[in-house]
Image 1 (cartoon, helix red, strand yellow):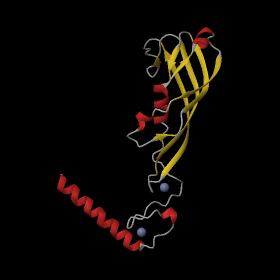
Image 2 (cartoon, helix red, strand yellow):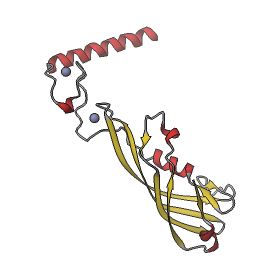
Image 3 (tube, rainbow, N blue to C red):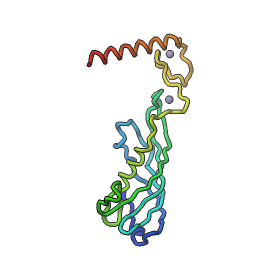
Image 4 (cartoon, helix red, strand yellow):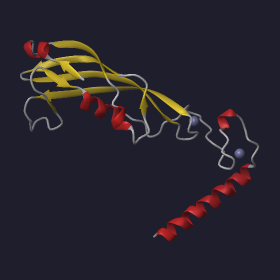
Length: 171
Ligand SMILES: [Zn+2]
Ligand SMILES: [Zn+2]
């Protein structure tokens, strides 16, 4: 998605508000099993600095991914601040700057990068998700399955032993 920054370039030093919707970069997050519910909204201010443009603000997106514990759908309303600069030529003073031509900047890379660095370690459907019973696979958020917790532990150790065994054989 391109953002027109002509006004910022014509009025350097002025903070000019902008609001723009960037199509969800779903392809970039496919391997993390993340989907997007709707577009990514960027709100902020653009400022012309000589021939460069600084963009500051916040992006919001709704991300959907399987819960790390129970595999049900987990939704996250992500808010991520951004503070980026766009330059016309590579600038050693701003190695992280994005390049642009003419009077429009491309927001795609900025959007992907600022979502990526703000992703949670894991998606949870809720803070206290109880996950799945390791014995019968029941979603424990929906109620207890009646499995014996002592048995669960031994089943888990047995599974671990099995996996170790497999590792040993592969080495
Ligand atoms: Zn869950
Ligand atoms: Zn169970």
